[in-house]
Length: 309
Image (cartoon, rainbow, N blue to C red):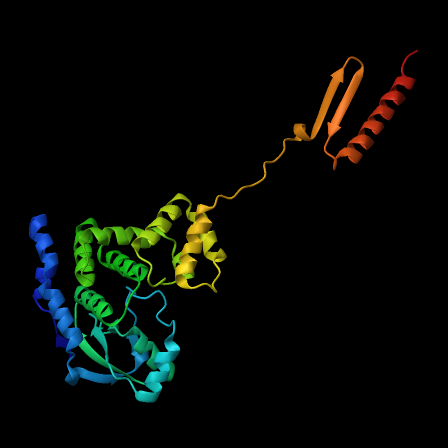
């Protein structure tokens, strides 16, 4: 039997009643009831609700919190193979009856790799509740990089903010899930959506690099999106993530210089003074120009001999 969590407290977290900016700031300074409930669900999972399920029956959610969840998965696979799965994953049952991951993607992938059932806690959760729980769990259990957090924010806004009416609500969900300032939500969304995904994937998480460098890369991508996509193929994959980010900034900052094309008239210059004609040509053209001139002079002389006397 699936459990119902969060309940009406989500309405307080996402309520759209008219409130002043001062009230919103006060809310940010203290943990909201919804976030508190999400944190409680992360820290005190109901062991009696866990069960073993087929990992292939659990689908991934639309909003990812890692650039590549399978990166470095071998160590986790070895640990679960040797010691078993110690911490259950959390899944929710959607309206169509399907099971969808809330958090624990890497544990789910590891169990798939091992071909064994995954221990999971199944709860009844709305999409909004699941995203808040996902964000809270990520902050508690791992060290997501700035760009991964920004992609998570962008994913929430993409999935929940498809209209003008729902966009504000999606932003509220995002800043409550990550417990960040609302103004940073908009900035993170612009950065994550303004840098081509192929470039983000080429760079990777770049752990330890903050907003300023990613924002600089975003500004450069704004100026030339096509060049940004080219840079994704030029970054050396052997470099660590932070150095790949620096390389992308350097490549986009450098201006490509192409040698100017000489006009046809600039390669062959003809001068005339009285009865004297001079021809200055590029060295590579000199043999052909000389041959053409001699041929032309020959034709002119031949026509002159055949003319009237």
